[in-house]
Length: 268
Image 1 (cartoon, rainbow, N blue to C red):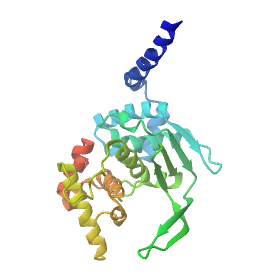
Image 2 (tube, one colour; image 1 turned 135 degrees about the vertical axis):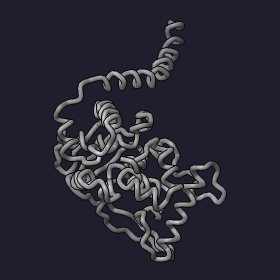
Image 3 (tube, rainbow, N blue to C red; image 1 turned 30 degrees about the horizontal axis):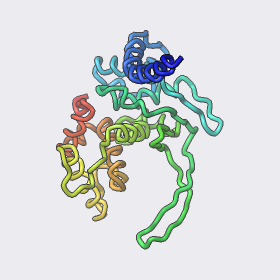
Image 4 (cartoon, helix red, strand yellow; image 1 turned 180 degrees about the vertical axis):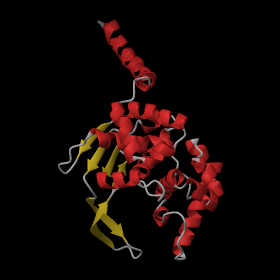
């Protein structure tokens, strides 16, 4: 009996250490399965950005989606029944971020909550004078550090349908999850950031903050000036949907995100 008690903790440790390898093996197996014809029709009909991808990246995205859809839980909110089309379209846009990166970087995501449209949250705000107030805010998406992503289906559908406006709620919220996993927005506010990423992206973020403070209309969404983590998410949207424009307006920033995502959307 004592030897059995000693062996049990070792067995648990072995199982935990083997879990990443097992998941990687399972994901490779899922990627070899035939891609359902209905999923293919959803992508062709609902996601013009998918049609712009080179054939090899289309294939890679389909493989990523198969593993993603097998692992993630989708939950309908406010009476919404999550359909296969919803799951496919959300997965396709989310997997753009890990198209050339390890899918394991989205392992933190446990649940995807889907509302029919914008959802209301109660938020507390503190103004410059320190006065605290509360108000309702209508949101199209939200990302939680605990591994939940909340999405409006109306906005998800609109994001997929218009691939050139630099707005994509799925890319935005999953960029937050990737940021949580990789620490992308860490040190962007530092006066002397370490590393090329932090120096380049931090300088671009401060440039956007200053432009917004001057009342200018910058190329990037001004919402990115509110916080470094929002800047990373906003630039990710522009990178995938407005690659040529981002490369022209902010070449160093584009190159930094091209290295991050290992993609070159300016040529799609």
